Length: 285
Image (cartoon, rainbow, N blue to C red):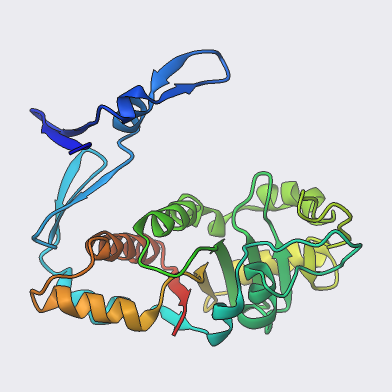
């Protein structure tokens, strides 16, 4: 065995001869082992045969309603056939293009999910709140977080995109000062190594960034407006996920990462619910 758990007095830590030989060097010149870094950051999740238990961030959690909530969790998934033809988050194009490539999640967000919005902004890079932000005047404000990956039940990919979304949930309820700080960035073109000659405006739809900011404020304070967050992923299949979760619910053996994915989804939904934000996840059928 290359990895084992050590039960401490108040926590659990990892032990691995291999990870202890990998050296991480910081910009300052300071060095540490990868194992020490993982334990310091608590960058791991431990699941158990009992799906209601999980160890996460130095704490042991129990949710006796977790398995019973599976049908409700599955309702946040939105299947799209087009996702099977997408193999990149941003895409790439060396020409003087004004649009993201058709095989990218960014293009998918613009053309499929956010297409009915009045304003669409690419907020990727820099001090981003989301990869995309869309506004439907007086009706909704939506943040989109994209993650490309090979098809499969990947808890690590889910963890990455959920962590990014949770970190930025509060930014939906921003203020005028922070919005005005965004204006300069949103007025520019999208600059990235995969688009060296980019002419892609960060304001993807709408009259102007000034109007977008003004409508953001009006929609934010509109009494019946919805606030939404989309995790835009192309690596998970709804039918496969449902099948694995059914196994779990019925006490049968499911794929190893199923429990972790279920807990991550639960964490995401509850975080959104606390802030009165609707949660959605795109997926393969």
